[in-house]
Length: 316
Length: 281
Image (cartoon, each protein chain N blue to C red):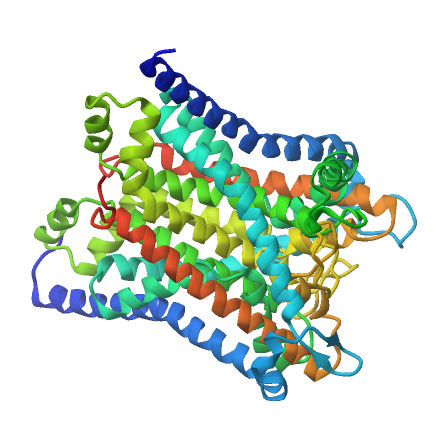
C-alpha cells in the first residue's frame, strides 16, 4: 500500500521516469536494428551493385574466378521451388485448416493442432538430414520413376533422376510451410462469424455448400494472406533446401535437375568466398532476398488484418 | 439418385477428403520423429555426451564441444535478446498508441518474416568483418536479433490480455505507474511471457543458417566467446553433408538430441500457460 507523502510521490515520479526510459530503449532496439540491418546489407552489396547494377538480377553467369556474377539461376530456383512447394502445400493445408475448424470432432481439434505446431518447431537442419537420408532415396526409388513414366511427355519430368533437385526441395519446403499456412488459415476461419454458417445451413445447404458458399468467400482475403505468408517462409528457407536441392548454378526445365536458391547460395559460398566482389555479390543476393520477403510479408499481413478486424471480407 | 442425396454424398466425400489431408499432414511429423529415434537412439551413449570429436575416418567420439557451444551461444543470445524483447513488448502494451509502439510493432512483424540467413549476413558484416575473425559472440548476436522481434510481439500480446480493471485497481490504490506495471500487470502475465520466451529460445536453438559464418563451428571444446565455436545444428549440417558413414551416425544422434531439446522447450512453453493462466490466478 502506497502512502502519499511528498517524498514518496517524488520517488514514484522518478521511478516512472526511469521505467519509461528503460522501456523506450528496448522498444527503440527493434527499429534501430532494422535500420542498421538495411544499412549493413546495402554497404556490403554496394561494390556489386556498382559493378553489375540491376543486370545482376537478369544475368545467369556465376564465375567467382573471373569475377562475373549474375543471380538469375538463384532467383529462378527460389521462385520455382517455392511455387512448387505451395502447389503441394496449399491444398493440403487448407484441407487441414478447414477440417479442424469446421468438421472435426471437438475432442481431436486441440491435439491435432498441437501436433502440427510441433511440425513447425522441428529445426530446418533436421528436415535437411531427414531429406537427404530418408525422403530422397524414397522419392528416387518410387515417386520419380512413376512421374517420369506417366508425365514424361512434359519437359518438367524428363532427363536423368539425380535425387537431389528442384522437386525434392519443393517437397521438403511443402512439409515445412504447411504448419504456418494451417495455423494462420485456422485463425482466419475462426474469425468468420457463426451467423454466416447458420444462415447457409438454414437455407438448406449441406455442410460443404455452407463452407464454399458462405464461409470461404468471407475468409478469402485472409486465406490468401496465409498462403502469401507461407510463400515468404518458403523463399527464405535455407538449410533444408541447401541440403536437398543439389546446389548448381543452372536453369533447367526439368524438376528432377539440381538447382540453387538465393538462400542456399549464401549459406554455401559466404564463408568460403575470398574475393571482395564475391562477398559483395552474395550480399547483393541477401539484400534482394530481404527486400522480396519484406514486400511479401507486408502484403500478407495487410490481407490477414482485413479479415481479423472483421471489416474486409465480403459476405456472400 | 435424388438431387438431395447426391448433394449430401458430395458433402460427405469432400469432408472425408479433408480428413485425409489431416492424416497426410501429420504423417511427416511421425516419420521424422520415428526415423530420428530409430537411427539416433542407439548412438546416445556416455561417450557421445562426454567426448569431443575424433579425427575424420575414425569411429567413436562425441559432441560435447557442440553441446557446450550451443548452451553458451544460445545462453548469451538470451542475455541480449530477452531483456530487449520483453522490454519492447511491455513498452508496446503500456503505450499502445504512441508512435514508437506503432513503429516497433510493424518493424517486429517485418523482422519476424526476415530469413535467418539474411540476419546471418548482417551479423557477419557488422561483427565478423569489423573484427576480422569469426566468433561465437557474432553468432549470439545473430540469434538475439532473431529473438527480439519474436519476444516483443508475444509479450505485448500476452500483456494486452490483462483486464484493464486490474491496472485501474492498482492505480486507484496509489501505486505508481511503474509498480503497477511490474508488480501487477507483468506479474499477472508472467506465465505468458515465459511461454513466449521459451518458444523463442526453442526456435533459435535449432537455427543453423545464422551461425554458418558467425560462430563457424569448431573441432575443439571451447569456452571463449571471442573465438569460433561448435554448435549442435552446425554439427548436424556438417556431418550430414560429409562423406563418412561414422559422421552420418553422429549426425542422426546429434539431431535427436537437438530435437529433444527443442520439443521439450516447446512443450514446456505450452504447459507454462496452460497451468492456470487466468488473470486472477
